[in-house]
Image 1 (cartoon, one colour):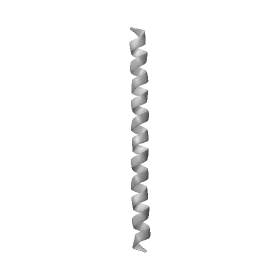
Image 2 (cartoon, rainbow, N blue to C red):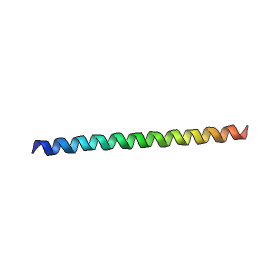
Image 3 (cartoon, one colour):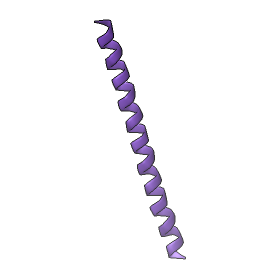
Image 4 (spheres, one colour):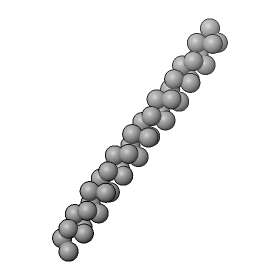
Length: 42
């Protein structure tokens, strides 16, 4: 049964990695929008 916990651990690590990438992409997009808004004011 060790393989079951190993597979769950690998899947959890992959899920955390994907969520992290999505979070960083959304932060970058928000930063770009804020920068564009600041540029349009000038």
